[in-house]
Length: 88
Image 1 (tube, rainbow, N blue to C red):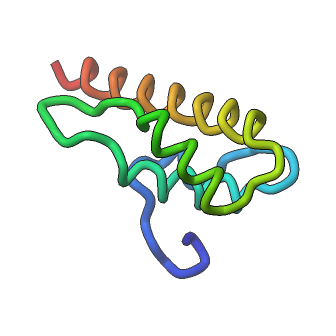
Image 2 (image 1 turned 180 degrees about the vertical axis):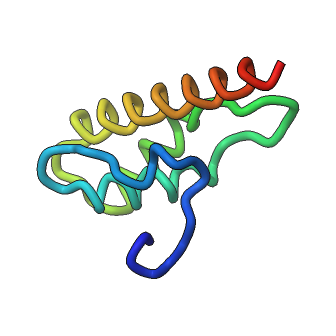
Image 3 (image 1 turned 135 degrees about the vertical axis):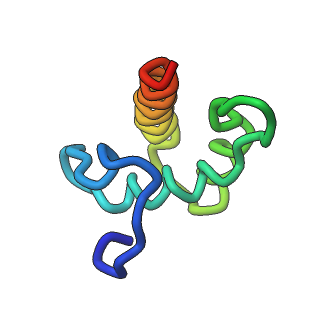
């Protein structure tokens, strides 16, 4: 995405450091982020979307993938919460 000139939603997402398959996890996270419910606040990526992604992409270690995506999502949601508190 970065190579294509696509700007990511928040600056800290531009340079993630995940050992190994950085870009693959980042692309999966961005794809899965489109599954968030739309409402008054940003919610987590639904578990069902992650499971469906694992099945669709035939990911061998689905459990590890789910843990990584959940960790990335937790960091993202924490960043969103902190940035909103800074504007108050």
